[in-house]
Length: 445
Image (cartoon, rainbow, N blue to C red):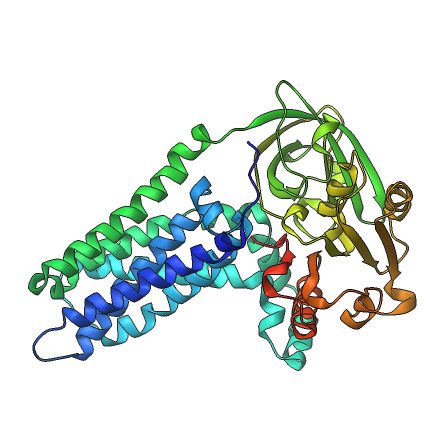
C-alpha cells in the first residue's frame, strides 16, 4: 500500500481530536455534578474516568489503522502522542486513588490494584530508554558509573531489548480493561447519572474493541510480504546495509517511508521498524542500520544471505513533495536513510532547489554515493560535515548557504533527538514557518 502525501491540516487534526474529547468529558462531568457540588470523591472518580478515556485513546493510537495514521500525519507521530497520552493517563490514577471513595466491592478493588500497578510498571518501562534525559548531569554520571555493576548488569539484560519491551507492552489493554471493570463495579457516581455511565461504557467499549482488533485481527488485515536476505554489507564501522529480495509480490512504498521488518537470524526471529533506504523501482528493498542496541549491534554476525524475512505495510509521511521549492535537508548519522531513499529514487533532476547537509563524526560513509547523485543534479548541493574536524553543525552555518528569506524555506531533517530539537528551535527563531519544518521520528518506539 502506498500512502498519499498528507497535508498540513492532518498534522493538527489528531491532537485537536484528543483535546476535543478531553474537553467534552470535562464539560459532561461539570454539567452532571451532584447537588452538593464537587466533593473530593466526585473529583477523584472524574479523574479515574478521564484516565480511562486517555488510555482508550492510547489503544486507538497503537492500532496502526489507516485513519489514525492520516489524522496524526504518520504512525510515528501517532506513537509520540501515544506515549504522551499514556503517561498523563497513568499519572491521573494517583489523585484518583487518593480522592476516590467508591463502593466496597472486593472484586472491583482487586481489579483496580491490578490495573493501576500494571499500567504503572509499563509507564516506567516506557521511559527507561530515555532515563538520561530525565536526570541532572551529576546524577547521570553516578548512574552511568553503576550501570555495569554486578546485579545491575543482569537486570539491564533482563529488561532490555525491543522484543521484550514490545511483548510486555502488548499487555496494556489487559490492564486498561481491569481498570475499566473496576470503575463499573466501584464508582457509585454512575448510579445518579445515566449520562456519565453511558459515556464511560462507550469509552471503555471503544478501547476494548481496538485492543481486540490489534491483538487478534490486525495481522490478517494488514499486508505482509515475504522476502529473503540477499546480501549483508558492512558499509562503515557499526553501519550495515541489508538487501532483501522479494519472494512474490514486493512492497509498494513512497521514498522516505519505514516499515516493520521481520528477519530470521541465527538466534531466531527479530522484529524492528526500519526506514527503507532503497528506491521503490529497485525491486529489492534495502535497509540501513547502525549498531544502536538490540540485535542491530550484532546483525552482521546473526544475519546471512538466504535467511527469510517479512516486511509489513509502509508507514510515515516524510515526503519531500510536501515542501516548498527551496528546501534544506539535514541528515545526522544514520538519519541519512530516508534521504538515501529520496536520492536513489531520482529518475530526473530535482524539481526543488536543495541543500543537503550530512553530518557525521567521521568521514561520511555514503558521501561518495550522494556526491555522485549531486553531479547529475544542478539543483542539489551537498555539504558533508565531519564533526570531529569542524564541530557540530549549527542553524546559522546552514542559513549562511541560503540566499532566500527563511519564510520561503522548507526543512526536512532526521537524526539524533537533541540535534533535531536544536535545529527545530533555531529555524523557528530564524523565521521558518513551523509547518515547513518536517522530521522523521525514527526513535518513536
